[in-house]
Image (tube, rainbow, N blue to C red; front, top):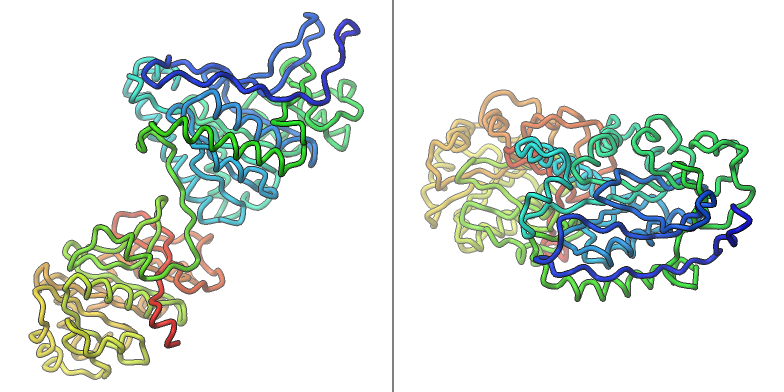
Length: 538
């Protein structure tokens, strides 16, 4: 520091920038946001430390624990939210620490903050960002524009693509836990965002320790702020000569690697405790939510709802807005939580496969209840003890067959007794009917030979069903729709026509948690609702 400049302040309060103009009056270019100050002794001056989304790529915040990394992310989030509209900047967070980023969810700009233990939700976030990256590359290529800033200049205000900022706290934990997870697919998607995201307006702000000095990550940006590192030898690994390393910088004090200038990160209030800083961000979030209330839903960041561990049938039915006599409710899931299930008028079969006691029968019962509510007639095959036997005598249920040796004549008579225009055969423990006398009849139904008014719902042991190559179950597998509950082997994917990765198999069974495939090549993690009356009986 120059002797002609006073020392940088140890406490730098953040000054909120002016609110943005109404969307219709905003320029395509976004103003840079200040999140600290930088000392420029050669020029005998100080300048704001800024993040300019129109010109910047990614940003690395490097430091040891308790050096101010998380606070830097919170200050940046506050600055971006205050300066920009929720239709111009979308925020997402991956919190691999102790929840410092959770307060970001109060901002209307924030789509989701994902905890490191929410592996499935983290995968959805990376998938969503990867898909957005691909889509934006196609748009830029079709328009012949170099980057998002140039593209936004050619678009009307109501159609401009938003800048996306992904913040990752304690990146060293992410790197340690996800480098090898699922054959490295999570880390590969993160590397792709770092490699290709900046040009299409996807900016990654990584806060981590010396791991960011690795050649794998350090080359993705020149914009780095190095806070305190516990070992002075680590400074050289992140681009700062050891002789230029500070002796014992205070939290929030760092060095900008571009020019080795000293910088001080701003804080949101004089109380430096994490709780107080988070409370200020939450209060700001309430103010910004009111300010941004006119932003249409389509222009806001995409939500990534948490998939609940338990959901009742009544709650799931409230989400079932696209039901019908051939569209049963099977599970809930999706980025925005909704009901999911097959269209049996399109593909006449749906199979639920998994180990015992993972919720196969519960899934069938949920689907059966929703079909009965839609006025569909049912035939139930339940050769073993099953909650589906409780449907005996219900209006719309033609018969409940408990004998695995049922004859073809008895089965055809039951088909003729279905009281409704649409009929579905619900088969529990389906492996017991492979090669049975009614196999040809079930195969005809599975092929859709009885018309679009008939369908088959089946559930069974995944290992047994995966071995079937012929008969009615072979046709069910060829239809390539179904749900796997707690898959234990890669071969389980053959039952529903998908190829599984190692990251989703072999985990401890979690009743009702499954992978849904509706024939479109997309695997969705879902949760099967439980029927309250059934649980009370159990």
